[in-house]
Image (cartoon, rainbow, N blue to C red):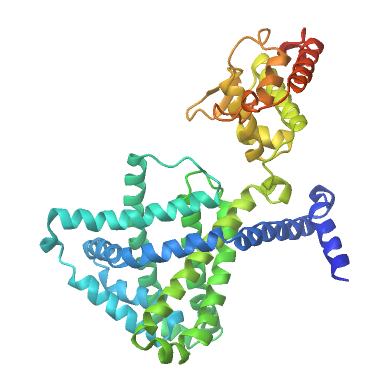
Length: 436
């Protein structure tokens, strides 16, 4: 019974062509695929490890971050919103959240920048920057990005997040608080149906602001261009998880007396660390949803396979060279790794096995602003099919491990040599120009 259900679900997810169903069905199936990819990542455990790492960094950086934010907010005259916003953020901790907020604010008040001196101030800023750097690293890992921002980009981007982010966040919290306490609003609320409408707006505004904050995080932090629609998709799901988890956390953990009985004075810290861990896990889950929404070709299990057979390597190498050469010959746009993967219908990690081999054998070269597009590195008449096949076969070979290092009988070497000569002879007169 279970096997039959699993078979039908697999057929629905992977064998349904989205262009053959209506838009609602296509959205539903695509959403299921995205959730499947995200669930697979979570079950792998790496997002959980990243969230744990961020918990430790958050504990070290929280007070310095709030101290810097407090200084910025004080300059704009809205520093009084720091404590209400912090209380709202720690609301799932119940009464312990109020107690912890007061303790954190007291720590922030005790930080005297004038007393710290230049070295202390640098350490303070470094601690804050390390938190943002680790957050970016976690997001880049989720987005399968290996290229990080340079030191100048990091400094400018991190500084803008640290200075402008808190201002927007706490100003929004202040607007919400002013809206709820305004005498004019209270008078209008006494008149129906305006009272019901205002009640709905009051409940919706915090949710909308949370979605907006998550969307900005998913757009700005990864070191790649994230589409707004994809960031919004992840933000909406992350907000729903945030609200639901906050309610459940408050009901079953924060108000539990078991933690106090077991951990005594450490209970508040244990509960706080649990909530920070859950919060980061939700944030990274939303980032994963955004990633798969923008890159649906990475969802299937097939896209995770990065081991290629010899036949597949040769076919991919010939196909890639044919596409690059055709565009070059017709003076069309150059190909990138992403566009090649989409055209050939394979994952980018699979192509990353082939592309360096073609490049190291001087068959292709990179071009463009970030060297992310490919062109033939020599005349098409000079690139033979045999050269392309040899590059595909030699992919991932290193000086430490190559065919010559294998101890074998002379009969085996003779067969290998015969095969290579036969392949070379069969394509001897073929060049890359013949493929186009």
